[in-house]
Each structure stands twice: as C-alpha cells, then as structure tokens.
Amino acid sequence: MNKPTVLFICTHNSARSQMAEGYIKNRYGDRYTAYSAGTEVTNVHPLAIEVMDEIGIDISNHRSKPLLEFFDTDIDFVVTVCDGAKSVCPVFPGAKKTIHQGFPDPSSGNGSDEEKLPVFRAVRDEIIRWIDENVKSGGVLVQ
Image (cartoon, rainbow, N blue to C red):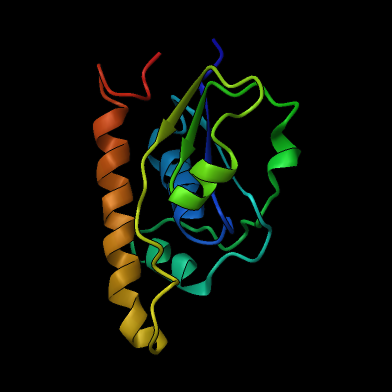
C-alpha cells in the first residue's frame, strides 16, 4: 500500500516546514511520507532543531530544499505554512490537493535566542496541534 505524500512549503524551509516534516515523519511515518521545501533555500534554523529535540524529534540532519527538487515527485497534499509561500506557489504541479495553513514565522522576531525560544516552541506546538487534528478521519490530510 502506498502512503499518501505530504509536502510542507514555506519561504525559507528553515523552521515551520522543517518542524512539520519532522513531526509527521516521527508521529505518523507509518501512514504518511513527508517532505518539506522552500521558495528560497537557506539553512535549517538552529532553534527549530532545538525545540524539536526537546520533544524527542531529531531534525538536525534536515537540509533546506528547493521546490524544484520535488517537481517529479508524486505529491498528494501540498501544505503552504506561510502566506509568502502561498502567494509564490499557489499551486504545485501534480499535487492532488493544496492546503494553506499559515503559522507565524518564529525566526522573524528580534531578540536573543533565549527570547526567541518561547516563540519557536509556540509555533511548534501550533503545527503539532494542526497536524494531529488533520490526520484524523475527516481532516484535510485524509484521502
């Protein structure tokens, strides 16, 4: 049986989409294949790695990936997790369903890493809640 594929897209593929990919792989990897990409390639944010590690999910080996890398991949669900990605990539070639669920950019705030950590945690928790709600029967990530 083929598992549905989910591609999470954000602008830099550095935090929100990386956390979503890591969570769904860890929690629902038996039911979904997950990827993430960005409209611009940067680096995975160290605080995203840190807050995922806090809940036992290691995304330290993740890398920021361009959208083009997935153009030949069979994608069931595309989830844009920021307004920037939605405006740049309103449709993804070949995707069966496109969903927009924006989350705040945890890396956009000012301050020290200590001051940013609570923001990263809050966004991580929002992403987890949204994924958990939407992999259940009737959610948007169900075929």
